[in-house]
Length: 66
Image 1 (tube, rainbow, N blue to C red):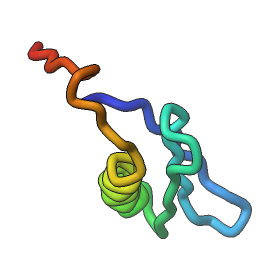
Image 2 (cartoon, one colour):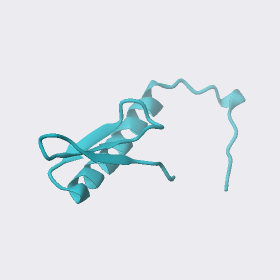
Image 3 (cartoon, rainbow, N blue to C red):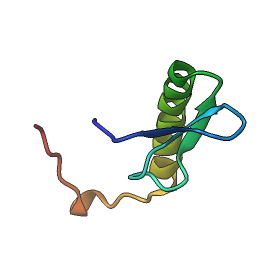
């Protein structure tokens, strides 16, 4: 999966990473690399939470293989 991540440095000097395609999915770090590592973890958590909230009707699902 590929997602766009926007990284900006805030006024305190921290790097803030946001994933526009995943509302509310963001993280930060003292360095650019730390922010990227942290947002990867946030993405995994975001996807787990959203999957757990979803009730899946097996009759209405298909598998798409790329």
